[in-house]
Length: 373
Image (cartoon, rainbow, N blue to C red; front, side):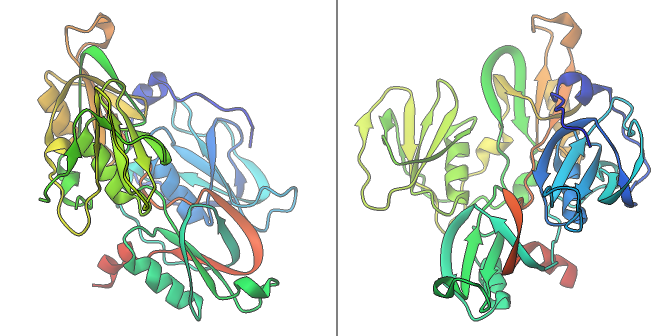
């Protein structure tokens, strides 16, 4: 499968043309060796294919199934790409399944994963635990909890008696996160507007504290383009108590401390509180940000005459979440009029998947309800 990593650059993003055909067939016991971008953990080949679909540069993949016997690399999902969009070779190999991205298939932005995984642990990403009588109740709790994306349940046969019947609720990001945000002359960036209607943006009374930092208690650091975007990230995370946003470097510090909220003056930093059970203002997602680059995560580029047309192109593309447009004031003439369409993975993605006896794992069924109507 190849262990070398290929940097995801503008060349890959710009040189691939997408076929109108929908290559949804899977090739069992076939490896697409080499051309690896990265690997992620995945519990099934269907989930792996969706990861490839949502990854900006992935065009095909190889999944290492749980029946793989050569080493302990079970549940590895190798994301791959070539300039041609096709594997360099195909090799028979027991214990793996390969396939292609579904980017050309008008993919569902919120795929349903209803499969239950016996004796499989989704390791990490826990934010809450409780006791339930069975995995079905654990999954129902996960489905009803807006922060839960997947779960692991400890059955009554587990070796450690003290944690039997424990239900672990787990989180992964389902809102757009811009991986790198920086100031740059001659470019304009923004988000897909139409997706704002389907994302969970909880109009409330915003509680912001200008020129104020809340030091310490950092949960994690993300990039955001505005304080409102940072507030959305905090509101989406089930353990975020409050946040601080630095406008100098676009850093969003999510914090976890339910005991106190201690502030101190700091120029260029705005702090705030997440929203609970109310609709956040979505003006930030409709805004065009001049002089701001959303670097990386490119799907491809197309030539456009204005930033507004670039935004419309992103709206039309089901794979696009945000964009950057290069105007004719940019220093490199070769990049003028390029509209870079971009995305990140927003589907549930366990950070690690392991075999473990007497546990059951699965996903929230929120995104499956539409298929039951």
